[in-house]
View 1 (cartoon, rainbow, N blue to C red):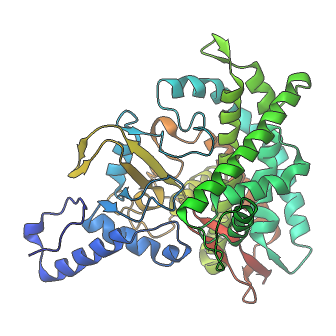
View 2: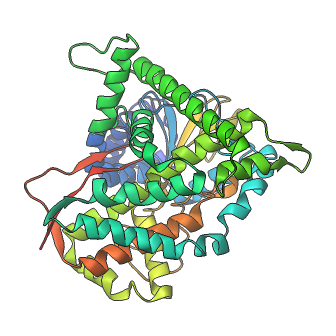
View 3: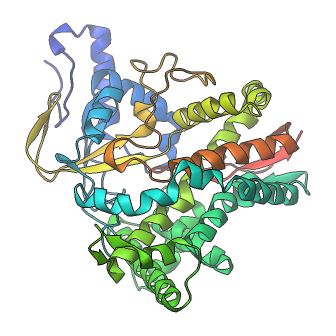
Length: 450
């Protein structure tokens, strides 16, 4: 007899399982049951876990995946195959982006489904076109050079703290209209909200401090339970909303060339101005999306380059060729996908053998889909001229990343500037790399000049 399925769905025809297959299948059951990408330790075996789940349990039910995710639920379905993930992400009617828990209110347009989602996107799309982002390139390059020059005044440095974090964050603050003098507060709120329990030491430190400020029990070991995490996220969310609301009020009398002022001028379907809540919910999404993703990708890419000089110098050799650099950046995004995409099931539905129920939560780890050998030959290798490369590192379907053209330029220009000025470097053996899970990335990347 086979072991109980424990609520796990699979494409596998179990009548064909050999003894060796059975061992692999049992292993897949075990890792799926314990799947928790929000744990820093998970990253040590991340792709091994996804490979075995993809082979035997491509749509798996994990009872541990949801509770520490900020979704406010216990357990989740997990998709690991590329084709399943693409179908899933493009079906917004059945798999809603309105998941169960957001600090204060759902974000616009991420947590809004079509057709309202499409109406909000039409307002914002002109702000993020290829042409609009191309105009930013001289500013991006100038700021990147300033940061790198300062960073390289020392022989040893933290690439994340001194470049990967400030480069996209300061640029985004300027675009959105957030005062640069608020940079540290903005980063602290972001880390408290996004990284209270995923291995990010600063995020945990801030979350524990806020929990104690709120009178919550974190115990002598400063433990953060799911309940404490939700309370902390709710409080920091309210503080961010108050900050955004004050910025909107200020711009009413003092408009500038930024997203806040554009939101004040915008109208929904040409019929009415946006409400205060709609503007706050939109800015909250920009806040969350603009401060973490590019920084995380830059850190992971440079960590790989520090560990693999051959791949680093292959990139340096092609990075000043616009066409080759563009293709290479897409491959780096595929290889270093960082986003877990949650969805809420809106009806009882059978999805490739998995019996989803109305209200279930499902996770689409883009890092799993982007390493599927059925779509990508040699998926665990960096192939800079990979073609085709239909990765989903920026998402897929109606909720595909609105800032994709900005992110591509920040990655390309950041990597170009850094490697022109310092082609040879290595990991600093006297300091520790700090990785975090979930929306994964690095909180610290200590490097030294070679």
